[in-house]
Image (cartoon, rainbow, N blue to C red; front, side, top):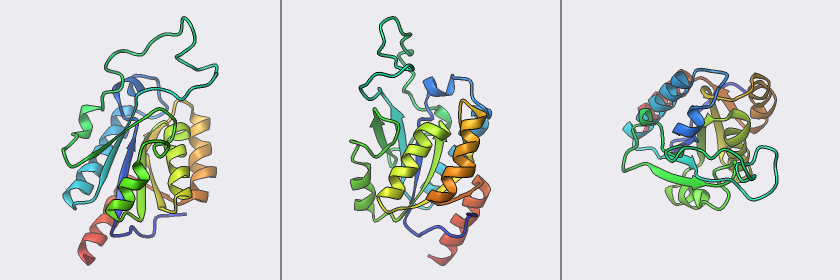
Amino acid sequence: MALSTLDPNTALIVVDLQKGVAALPAVHPIAEVAANAARLADAFRERGLPVVLVRATGIAPGRTERSFSRPGAPRPPADSADLLPELNQQESDHEILKQTWGAFVCTGLDDHLQDLGATQVVVVGVATSFGVESTARQAYEHGYHVTLATDAMTDFSAEAHENSVVRIFPALGETGTTDEVLHLLEKVAATA
């Protein structure tokens, strides 16, 4: 579904735009994705709307073929969980540390958004089919209106990115570009 509106109490959730994740090969240039996420973060802050910056600081327990916990598996660099500097983290931002794909599990994110009166979220970040999709699914399940800025996200697989954007996201909410979200933010500000 194309973008139609943003609620006056919309929060931005930026998923895993951190050094370790950004160093991995991605389908879309990470610099462009980070620049679009930063534009959104700046616009949300300018309007006094919540910005949530999510960092993966570990992984959920369990056996997978991609686990860093396997004996002999490479360890990520010490600064891999540091946010990208382009995001220009501010004191007003809410930071979430997570160990699962989605940002809502065991993080207090829903309580934080409820305390702020948020009714809608815009979700961006990396990877489209992992952290972004999981966070969007969880937001939808918690009853938030979900919007996804698809040019402010990327994946490690073109097929996985396309599947999320074309098949999954339209069932969860509305999709559009960073510019379209910024345009709707202007409309919300004009009516406030």
